[in-house]
Amino acid sequence: MPTLLSRLIATALLFFVFLPGAFADEYPTKPVRLIIPFPPGGSNDVVGRLVAQQLSAKLGQQVYVDNRGGAGGTIGTEACATAAPDGYTVCVISIAHAVNPALYTLKYDPIKSFTPISIFASGPNVLVVNPTSPVKSVKDLLTLAKQKPGELNYASAGVGSFQHLGAELFKLQAHVNLVHVPYKGGGPAMQDVIGGHVKIMFSSLVQTTPFIKSGQLIALGTGGSKRIPVLPDVPTIAEAGVPGYVAENWWGLAAPAGLPKPIAEKLYSATQAALKAPELKAAFDREGAAVIEMSSAEFGDYIKTEIAKWAHVVKEGNIHAQ
Image (cartoon, rainbow, N blue to C red; front, side):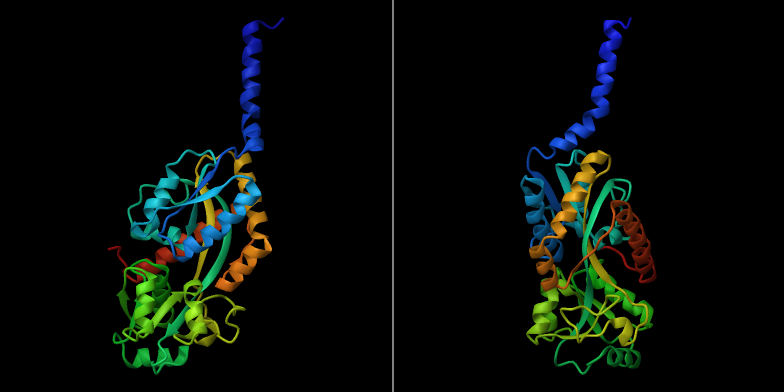
């Protein structure tokens, strides 16, 4: 007959076998922290807050935003990587997550330190110029850039930003020499382009659409693989003169590595339900972003592909973090 000790051991083993599933059934029992590794107002913050609102409804607990900006997004991302893998700390990751390994010495591994949950959406960049610029098309820009190598300036939100990398990709694929003028944020950069101090910017569509609609900026091309509904008359940069050019920002949800699979699956299901909410899709449409469907595994593979792509741009562009 089994001894008392053996029965206790068997009971304990059963407890630990079913514990993750039991926790997942109850999860979440308290508010969930969503780290956004950038200050309020940028595309990461806009997208993250839209998703957080819907996730709160789907999970039945508040998903509250914790903006942890600094060092190109690495400070907030590190805070997520080192948090307990219990589902109560998650973070927004974006294209910056793929770019930063090539720019910084990180205290976390962009793949191994995280559990990829779900991609949210993507939005292309958009090539814009000041209305006073003589450049009226992508081909005009290519012609002028080849006539005046190293004389045309473009603004960006800073070294390593989506705006910067999108412009460097353009330079590599179009074989032109444009001069980078970095600013401390996308807002100041855009205001100087609107003011005519710098004529060109490869901006985030989410940030720029209102100024295109108002006529303060002229859109020459978008960086997606196809035209977008919010600017249907604007060609893609690829079709307008730089074949193969694609520069799209993207946003998604990640958690610390070691997150129990049942909790990861519950977060994935809740995120997918949130992304199907009509009000969220409508908000993304207004911002020029498109919801993307991927499994968690596909999202993990996509991140690896993006890291390789942008590492090449950083290397070829001889880009260094400041």
